[in-house]
Every structure is written in structure tokens, then in C-alpha cells.
Amino acid sequence: MPGPKNLDPSSSPRALLGAELRHSREATGLSQDELGQSLFVSGSFIGQLEAGTRRVQPDMASKLDEILGTNGFFERNCKAVNRSKYPDHFAEAAEAEAVARAIREYAVLLIPGLLQAKGYAEEIFRAHNPTAPDKAIEALVAARLERARLLDDPTKPLLWAVLDEAALRRVVGSGAVMAEALLHVVELARQRRIIVQVLPFHAGAHAAMHGPLKLMEFEDAPSLSFVEGPDTGKLMDDPGTVRRHTLLFSLLQAAALPPKESLALLRSVAQDYVHGEQHP
Image 1: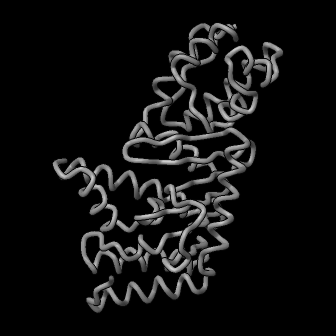
Image 2 (image 1 turned 90 degrees about the vertical axis):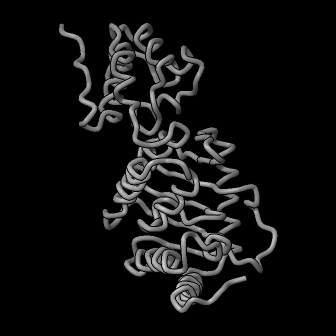
């Protein structure tokens, strides 16, 4: 019997690799928990690999080939599947985001990437990479805008964003850039494509003062949470941690302005930028 074919990286490679993992595991009669024990990971982690929400890493790929008798298939294809246009610390989160049924995100000092207008994204990348050539910045912006195209689907994923008021008040680029950026968020909400709330300054101390937070839910895999810092990020699947982060987000929602008032504030601040008013 011929062995499995190499994957075509242009054809949903993560999903194809996950499907092959499920097929090979079932062919050997192993449950997800049993395979996980051999790899020192949980059965739910194996489920996430099979669902395409987590990456098969190179060291795990060789062990899978050994356990499942797949003649180097996973090791050969792992490298191609893991190629990404995103930075290493964010690549796995971005790819999980693309197949999520719901995304909940709290942003502190900037508008989340999925909601960024082009001019705003350019200014963010230029500030973070002041010596990068224009072509490099253009490539980063293009990847961010392409990532945001998942919102072109009229129904999924559900995206619920809580923006700290600081993200509205910090001038990125210019007043014109900020006005465009805020009105872009308003338009997405007006189209009923997203739900957005603003956490106002007067809310005082809150549950996520440590920094940004992203939660992702999936149809056929456990939920994930993602926390990020400068050039670093961690995707977590521990159920206790995800439950704790889900509670944090619920507390943020409770402390934030209701959606209708949040949109009114976004419009007001955008108009202030249009008219050149300064903010404290």
C-alpha cells in the first residue's frame, strides 16, 4: 500500500496534516489520550492538532512518525506546513484565529489587528520597525489586511472586542489617521459584523491591567487563550487558565461601556480628530 502523499502547502495544509494525523492515529487503534501519553501532552492537545488549531512542531513530528509508523511523513511535511507570513511568536495564534468560531479580544494601547485600517497599520509597523525598508513595511501591512479578511464572512467568527480608552486617545500617525481608524471600527459595528465596547478611563482599576488578552473558541476543539508582549506571545490551552482568562474578559465586559454608548464615544472622538481637537 502506498504511503500518504506529501501535502500541498497551498491547499489548507494545516487541516490536511491534521486529517492525516487523525487517520494515522485511528489506523493504529490509538485514542487521542493514548497518543498524547506517548508524547507527554494531553489528549485535547492531540485533538487540536487534528483540528488544525495547533501546529505540529518538528520535534513532535519525528515522534509521531515513530509511533504511528508513517515513514517520515510528518517530519517531511511539518516544515512546509509551518511556513507563515506572520512573526514566529504570533503565527500559531493567527492561524488558530482563522478557524475560530468566536474571538474575544481586549486591547490596551492600540486597536486590534483585525480591526485596523490601512493607514493605522502602516503607522504601527513603522513605529515598531523604524529602520525597515518600505517594502518590508508594505509586506507586513498586506499580511495584516489579508488576515482581517476573515471578517468578510457575514456571520463568523463572532468578534467581540473591548478597547481601552487609551487606544482611542493615543494619536497614531495623525488626527486624520486616527479618525479613519476609529470610523473603520464604527463601520464594522454598524454592519453588525463585530461587537465593540470601550473600557473608559473612569472605570479605574480593572481585571486585565496586566495587558492584552485574546480568547478563541472552535467548533471541534477546546478553547485557547493568547497573551502577547513585545516580540513574544503564548498560546495556552490549559482548561483552568482558559477559564480564568474567560472570567477576566467577562469582568472587562461588565466594566466597559455598553455597545451603543461605546459607538457614540468612538464617533465623538473620531469627529474631534477630524476637527483637530486635542485630547488630554
